[in-house]
Image (cartoon, rainbow, N blue to C red; front, top):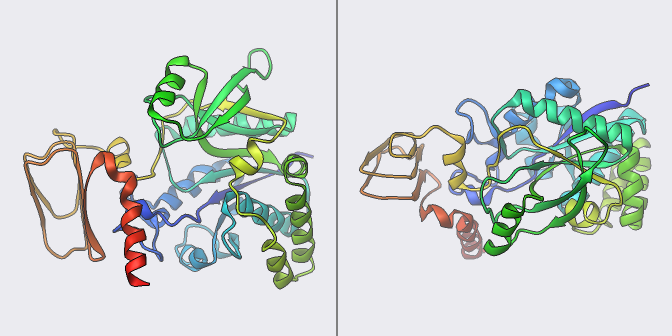
Length: 357
């Protein structure tokens, strides 16, 4: 019997780099950023639903966001999986895996792990690539990820060094190494060398393969996963939560993928972008003749290469003669920064939190 296919959309981030629109109760995954009619979470769920069935799309998030997501209508409320506390992405996936194993009372699950902050240009090609990745994971027992062919020397992404083909005539490659976010010089070298792909943060594996590799890389966490599953199967939610607190705070890249023995990479055949900060919108959305993204009540004169957004301010925003700036206005605040400093917006959030404390 074929494994039951299930998708997990990770949506627990705070989206601080999209301040002032992103707020604790409405972070970026609940904003309509890359598509005018859909939130990032709605896009992600709709993207994978044809592959696994809408009823088999689950969202892994935090306790704080569980209710806003459950009431958003994106997926059934019962399909929201809320981790008890933050334990980074590996902890998130351990909790989600234990929850699904207990719910379906099965080891025979094939999991597609995606995130709620990607922009995908060709969804048909995306689904074809994901189908290939899931099939490879099911056939070989590998942990599979999707690699993106780099179009620039990006320092904000991790990279994958690829090795030999998994088999003749197949696009999938062995993963030779995971690279952290590089320096500008290293990023340029990776792109020029042609053997590195961007790490998309999407993963595909069977539950059995995930547990096998986890038992080797993080034996204590593997034991906790089994114990959590047992507690959830018995209906002991409080016990499961106490067990979850024993897990370390570590990313799935660091805690599993970099240590796993059997990892494959499927090169993407679709246009992809990480919607990580305001500057990404220029790559995801239509621009005017001067390269500006303009949304809301904005009056611009001689602006070039800017992201200009007014959401709910109640008055127009006017700009004159500016270039390569991000200007975002909302009832929560006003942001003005150079596009190439957009990654630093989270520093504003940190300072505001310190001042409120």
